[in-house]
Image (cartoon, rainbow, N blue to C red):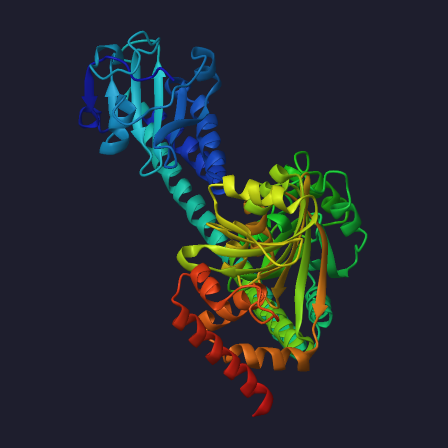
Length: 584
């Protein structure tokens, strides 16, 4: 509103102290009527609109606008105006700090009267149609601005009425704010009580879950108990536990709730692998993911539209983790958008960690009993690893028999040439910078190759995994790795993919070894030092124990980079320790 323009200023001290009887009577009637109206207001807006209606009934106050302080943006903004003010001004301005006389009055808290506001140096709009202007503060809330198009228009009665009206408005604004604060406090108290009550029920649930988990003896029993217990809480409508399968899709292992068909819609839709589902995000990041705005996000996320159709309005996905080892994800759905408070999220995250530890413990027990390993078979389409490059350039098919770490970070690789010419392979290997030497063994189809780096073996060794078999052809091949349980399967598989990027996981299984045979074998191996084991295996692979010997001790010592006496000492000591496991 263009209401504060250049004008001479007169203070309220110049206002006559008395008015004629008629003005006094009219003022009292208006104030009495205003007090009754203001007593019925319930919001700041209603107070402003009531004062504006009263001002319209007074001749010199009929062009009035009320401004309130907006603390959020730091401005005085118009909240109500009289019809005469709306006719005079197209748009009412917003007053920023230091930009107008209205701002000065708001800060000073003193009424100011201008015979001609255009003469004032801090006028907001020099071309304002207003000449006389009266600005009265509304305490901490804002200001009331009245104006006329004629100069020197405000009488003492006008000023007294405006100040009294402003005082009544200020009192009403204080009352409304106080009542609003009380209502807000009461609302917060009710919400806190509801949260405490809900958390009490959730904590009771968690204790029940923990009790059932401790009693369970299998992974399936643990996961189903968790889901069953969670949906017993009124505001939890559905819960499921799952993980990604070999194809990369989310696969459920246990679920409970009224909408079991929801998982089919969620996980088996055409866009299931393309949509950034919260459960997948939780698995990938290791952090809980929650959503409360299903209605808002339904257009962008088809999964949320499906959830709304089932009566769900919020969710939280919690990784089931034990340290760096992840055992899947738990996702819970609520029937209200406010189901999962921050406190509730924290409790569910603790539950996820507890369940993850329980599943990890069960895996360890199963591994001890079954002596099992996880076996993964990958189809290799194209690889730059040294064995695959040898197969490609020599146009042959190679199978890995065994491999040994060598000095200086190198590897000794024993290969069988199943298809192709061994001599061609040896000639090709001699030209490879990454091959130190290639030696034919006694068999027509076997060779020993010393390479400077064998990436897949190095990566697997870092994770405690083993390269069980490797088959290399000119156009690709396959590898099989074994991973002791429990291990972080996802990390190991990801590391393999980083070394051999053009691979597909075609099989995942669990293999169980004979416990007695494994214990006996391990007992003998554990008696050997790493060096003794390497020397013995190299001697075995190079035919030292054959009759007649295929390679002498001096030849094998040279290939190992040690002196002959050192080689023979390692062989004799290693054999003695192996024999001790048999005869002692």
